[in-house]
Image (cartoon, rainbow over all chains, first blue to last red; front, side, top):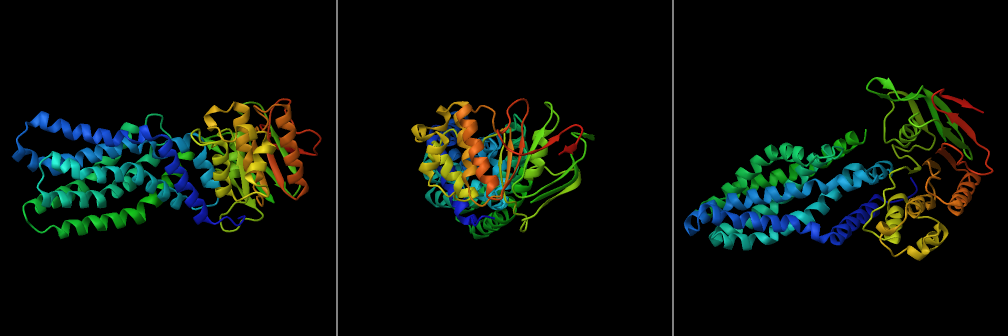
Length: 227
Length: 202
C-alpha cells in the first residue's frame, strides 16, 4: 500500500464520525431526550410512592437505557453503507475490523456516554439511595460500551435492509438480557448493603469479551451485507 | 498489473455475465462496454474486491498480503453531505494516502475552489462527481477502477478527467473504465471489453 498508516486513517475516521455527530447534534440528542421521557413516565404510570420508585429504579433506568441505545443503533452503519463509504473502507486496505471498532467507539461516545452522564440525575429522580446510585452509574459506564459493541453486530447485519430497525431490536434485545440481569442485580445489592463486586467483575468480563469479539463479527456482517 | 481468469458471478444461480478473462499491464486502459444490466458495474465491483467471484480468479501483480493497490470511484460517491468539500477530500486522503498536490490545489484543479468550504449537500450532481474524483489525486495507487466516470460531468470536467487519466497512464498506471453510449475518453489507445459476449476485442 502507498505508505498510509492505518492509525492515521483510523484517527481521521474517529474525527470524522464525531464531527458528523456534532453537525447532526439535534439527531444525536434524541436518545438522551428519549431516556428522560421514558423514565419520567414511570412515576405517572406506577404512582409517585418514593418507596416503590426506589425499588424499581435500577430496572427502569437500565431498560430505558437499552431502548435509547437501540434507537440510535440503526444509524451506526446505515449512512456510510448507503453512500458507498463502507465499500471504500473495505478496499482501502485498512482492517475492516478496526474500522468497525472505531465506528462503534464513536457511537458510544455520542450515544452511550451521554446516558452515563445523565444517570445520576435519573437516580435522584427515581429516589434511588445514594449507595445504589453510585453503582448504577458504574454499571452503566461498564455496560453501555457492551450495548454499543453487541449492537454493532446487529446494525451491520441489518444495514442492507431498507427498514432494518425493528429486526435489529429483535436481534439484539435477547443478547442484552444477561447484561440487564447482572447490572440491575448489582444496583439492588448495593442498595441493600450487600457485596456487588462479583456482578461488576462479570460485567467487566463481558466488556472485554465484547471488545475483542464483536468487531470481528461486525466486520464479517458488513462484508456479507455488501454482497 | 491485473490478471483475470474466467471470472463470473452468479445471482440466484444465474450468471450475471459470461465468464470474462483479460490481462492488464502498466499503461493500459480497458474500456468495459455493454447494454444496461449487462454487468459492467458488477465486473468493476468484482475487480475492486467488494464482491467475490463465483468462479475464476483475479490476481493483482502488486498484491501484498491482501492490500489492493487501487482506487475505485463508483456510482455511490461516498461523500458526506454534512462535511465541506475540503473536509471530504482531507478524509479521502487520510484513508487512501496523500496526493502530490496540496488539498487547496486539488480543489482548484477539480473546479471546486469556489465551493470548497460549502457543505457537500449544497453541490450539484456534477460537482459531487468532481469531489469524488478527488480520490484520483492519491499518489501511489496504480490501478484505477472507474464506473461511468463521465456521467454528470460537463465538457470541462470530462477533459479534466482525461488529463488526469493521461498522466496516470503515462506514469505507468492502469485503468479499467466502464462506459456506455458516446461518452468515451478522447484520444486514448484502449482495448474494449464488450460484456454479454464476454470476449476481449483488440
